[in-house]
Structures are given as structure tokens and as C-alpha cells.
Amino acid sequence: MAETGTGKLSQVSYLEWNPWDGPIAGDKHYKISFKWNTNFGEPGAFLITNKHPREFFLKSLTIDVPGGAKLGFRCNSWITPEQIDKNDRVFFANKSHLPDETPEGLKALRSQDLIQLRGTGTGQRKDSDRIYDYDVYNDLGNPDKDPKLRREVIGGSEDLPYPRRCRTGRPPTKRDPASESPSSASSIFVPPDERFPHAHYSDIVSHTLEASLSTIVPTIQSIFSPEFKSLDDIKELYVRGLQSPQNSVKSIGKAFKSPFRFVAELLDKAEDSPIINFERPQVFDADENAWRTDEEFARQTLSGVSPVVIQCLQVTQIAFVLNVLISCKKQRRLKENVLWVFLIVFQKFPPSSSLDAEEYGPQQSSITAQHIEKYLEGLSVSQAIKSKRLFLLDYHDIYIPYTARINSRSDDVKTYASRSVFFLTRDGTLKPVAIELSLGATKDSKPERNVYTPGEDGTEEGALWLLAKTNVRINEAGYHQVIGHWLLTHAIIEPIIIATHRQLSRMHPVYKLLIPHFLNTMDANQTARQSLLAAGGFVETNFSSSVYSMQMSSKAYKKWRFNEQALPSDLLK
Image 1 (tube, rainbow, N blue to C red):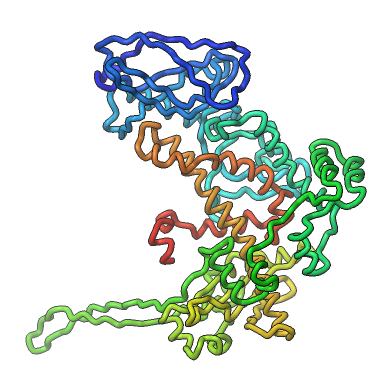
Image 2 (image 1 turned 180 degrees about the vertical axis):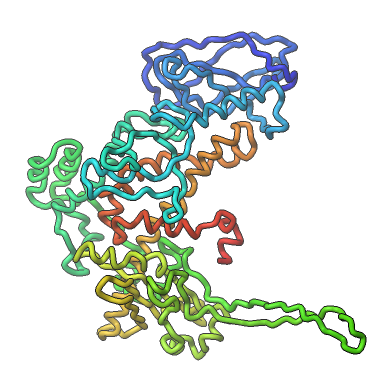
């Protein structure tokens, strides 16, 4: 035990309850007695075997030590029946230990637990497996169902790098050996302790609905009008909600069976009431047309879905240092070195691209000082940059490699790659002063770029300006969901979660600090892979980035650096 360092074990104690007891709502407390020897020492761990036919979630164990002290063991883990997993589970006391400070009696248990968590890297994962292993994103496609649903493997290559996911080990598809066969609602794997504590039936139902989302949404869309006829139609959503069209229930009932039955029930219950109510945007309370204004466009850039992309255009100083050796002819020897410093100042305006100019067009933006200086309150571009009042919202390099491919897929979906320049006014508010929309080259055309500046409502310039702002918002929405949200919030964390379980024992202090931040992340990620990110799923059918969404996400990850994510580095970029 911890104090004696001998790894001494107590006698086995048993806890019995009805073997057919089902899941219990809420917590259940049990008492169990251990035989205690006065020279036993302080327990550093306990072993548990589940001989019950059902798994259970063990939250904690508290030992009332003779003498009045209490010793706690924080568990928060699913305990699998012995028939499924023959290994005893080990839990350590709440006291933290670094590896070199671990009591001798606990070192073997610590090592064995980590070995079990790492697995062997082989075989298909079962629901009960407590194994954290790495794999690439090779399960997004479904070529056996339709060759058009084949998707490239994301991750594991220089061209398409990506954070690792948790390995599931399903067999490869028949048409593409590089692709893992997709999961079904009944074959979703995530290590048990990554599941919601109340998992089981409710989760199975939710997974079924989530897995069907990519088909259910088009079904609902087919019932309702496919497009808005005017802005008034959109505003009406906040007044009347989404109404159930007449005979829609019958049309669904004839066309589909479960899991679409719940859609029919939803519509049936709606009758003359809206089936979806939309909360009225707060900005409407001030002005229903505020969304059209430049002020609101700028405000949403800072407080909308993706507020951390905007950057300050800066003056950058680079010093070239030359050591010049001065020769003294009279003395015919070298004197001390003289240090010469040449300071070269350059401005990062116009903004530029890091992409290959031959493939994607000129690197330098076509936004010039002439476009924006009339909006700078008398300042020149140089003065505005030096006073840190010019800002850039740049989605160019993410979108430009894919604009031609996206635009060739459908007559209904078109996109541009955008750059937007903002100016900080005297009153402390931000306003857009120029937007550049770019198209990549196609086999029939060269790269194209156009710059738009603010125009008055009711004029052609004003209409083009509004459309330009709309395209920026489309870029922003796609970037936020696929990169800002999915990649930078979910996907990047998954390999860190895996590494934490593989390398850090539960008794490691860093493990205890990290683990609360990982709650439910892997469970959400595997559901997203199955229903949102999969070929033909919600992202591909509803985002302008379409089938290229994960590739674009990979390109963004290629520039991601771990050491730039903490303050202040991430704010200084």
C-alpha cells in the first residue's frame, strides 16, 4: 500500500444486489465492509470486479478509516461485467503522484492500467473496450453504397494533414480498401468513459435520429417551399414560425416508415400551430433593417459566430544587421567590429496570399489605397495602419483553391473567396471600407478579382455592396462551422484526449486538471463523423463548401501550430 510500499492486498469483500436490477434513476449509495489490519497502512488503490450481468457507472468510493479519517477515490467510470472483460479495474486514491514519486506498491498497477488503455492497435473495437488508439479520418465515405460517396482519407499525408480520431477498427469497404466501412447507429464506438453518464437507451434513440439527420432534413425541406420569395418571408418566420403545409402528414406517411415516423407525428401534432418557432433577433427590436447597415455588418464580425479571425493590419519592422570589418591600412591589422543596423519598415497593405501565384493568381490583393482612403476620416493608409485602425477579415486562402470546383457542382450554389478591410472610426466603432471577391482559375478562365466599396441604398453600387457583404457572411458561416467550430474546437482536442489516457495515469496531477475539459467531446465527435461530416451528410448538403468541406478544414490545420494557441500568442498573430 501507499505508506508501506509493499503492494499489500486486503481480503476480498463482496457487494450483492438483485442480478436483474435495471438502470436506476439518480445515484444509489451502497455500504460495504472491509477487514482492516492495524499495520495495513493507508490504501493507495482498490481493485473491483463486476460479477453483475449489467455494467454500472461507479462515481466514487469513500473509506471510513479507523480513527475517524476518510479516504476518497474519485472513479467516474463504467464497470464492465466480468463475462465481457476479465481484467480487474483499478482506481487510485485522490492523492496525486508524478511517475517518479509513485509509491512502489502502486507502480505496477499504474503501468498495467495504462497498458490496458493503449490496446494493441488491432481488431475491431467493441462497446466495452477501454481502448484509446489513433486513426485517420478514413470513415467519412461510403463507396460501397454509391461510388460518388467515396471520400479521400483526411490525415496521415503531407497534402491532407489532420488531427487523429479514435481508432474503431471496422473492416475496409469493398470498393476502396483505404476507406473504413461506415458505422451504423448500432455500431458507434467510443470508449465507455467518454459516453454521457446516462447513456444507453436514450443515447441509442438520439444516435438513431442524428444518424438519420442527413435524410430527414431533405425530407422536411421537400415538404416546405424550397426557397424564400422575399425578405418578408424570412421576417414572417419570427412572427408565425414554420407552418405545417396541408396534407404534409399524409405525404410523409405514404413515403416513409420509421425513423421518419417521428417527423409525421411532429407535423400531425402541429395542426394549425407552427412546428418550429424562431426567436426574434434582438437587433429587430431596434430596426428590422439594421442587418443591412455597415455598422451591423461590422458588429457581427466582432460579436458573431467567428470573432477571432479578424486581424489588425500592422507596420512590421525588420532589422538587417551587418557586421562590417574595418581594415586599418596604417596598422595593417583589423580593428574592432563596427555594427551597422539598417531598419527597413514595410506595411502589410495591400494584404497578400501565401498561395502559389501561378496556380491561384497574383498574391497581392487588388484592394488599393485609392479604394479606401476616402473612408479613413482624412488619414492616409499608412497613418491608419500606424495608428492600428485598419483591420482585415481574410477568407481568401481558405476558399480560393475551391471556388471553381464548388461553382461547377451546381447552378444553385455559388461562392467567392473574400477579403474585407475595416476601419476603426473616431467614435470607436468599426466599419467596412472595402471587400474583395475572388474566383479561382478554371480551364476556361483566368483568376478573377473585383473590389467593392460602400454604396448608397437604392443604387447599383449599394446593391453590389450588399451582395458583397452577403458573400462575406457565407464565407464566415462555412469557416466557422467547418474550421472554427469543428476543427479548432472538436477535432484538435480528440488526439489530446487520446494521448492523455494513453500516457497519463489517473493519479497524475496533469490528468486531473485536463479531464474535466474533455467531457463528452469524443462522444460528440464520433456522432458528428457519422451524421454531419459523412459523405452526403448535413455539412456537404447544406454548406457552400459542399464535398470539399473536410479538405478545406485540412488546409487550415496545415497552418495550425500548437505553441501559438495560448495567450498572448494567439492574439498576436
